[in-house]
Length: 240
Ligand code: HEC
Ligand code: HEC
Image (cartoon, rainbow, N blue to C red; front, side, top):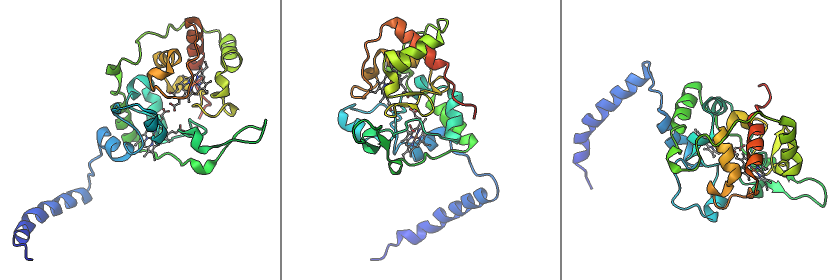
């Protein structure tokens, strides 16, 4: 069947398109906005708005950590830097059950490196644009109480002891590279990565962020929460 409309449309469609191509190849390629990058390259793996339902199935299926409250979670300078040069945060990936091979009795679990793929990196400009966009997400969700972190004078050795021995955090998190569990995110640059008020809110009630997340609610008193949060804020990672 013939389509008489098509040839008549051609010039009006093709000529502007040709001009647009010319304009692009002749110099200035329009940089993408942060929102465009998020929609084109990130939403396949990350939630950037609050999911309809936070059921166990969703947690199990998700391909990356949630970013819909990124603005109350991350420090912007860390985000900008990490997006240009992503490093491993969760040694066993976002879903440890998929990558950790349980080892025989008494030997540590090992992580199957084939289950983890390197994270995509952004250019400096796009990283800055995306970080600025991410910092807008989450303040209206009521997850974090502003000023919850009291910033008491730190007692690093006592708090380090709470972390590694008394409260069992180190069975899932490492406060030094290679030193600690691998099912939770590394904490050795937690102070660079995370906002102090977010750390306090997360320690008080991890399930407020996701009802099924596998960090247990540890029944910490407020003094311990403040000490642990203070300790984590001192962890700024290795000089890179
Ligand atoms: C193929 C899936 C995939 C895509 C696409 C992807 N990510 Fe990720 N992202 C992940 C995984 C998996 C992690 C966890 C890495 C880790 O913990 O070591 C992650 C971690 C992150 C983190 C750190 C989160 C945290 O809680 O510590 C940020 C920020 C992030 N991604 C941003 C982005 C942005 C922005 C884009 C788009 C430019 C993007 N990601 C595209 C899978 C993806
Ligand atoms: C059974 C393992 C487990 C234990 C024990 C545990 N955590 Fe977690 N923790 C996790 C997991 C899993 C997450 C969430 C990871 C995610 O969302 O990808 C988490 C998240 C966190 C976060 C938020 C970090 C982020 O990237 O969003 C902080 C802060 C934290 N834990 C600190 C602690 C402290 C301090 C202790 C000890 C009082 C502790 N955790 C004990 C497994 C654990």
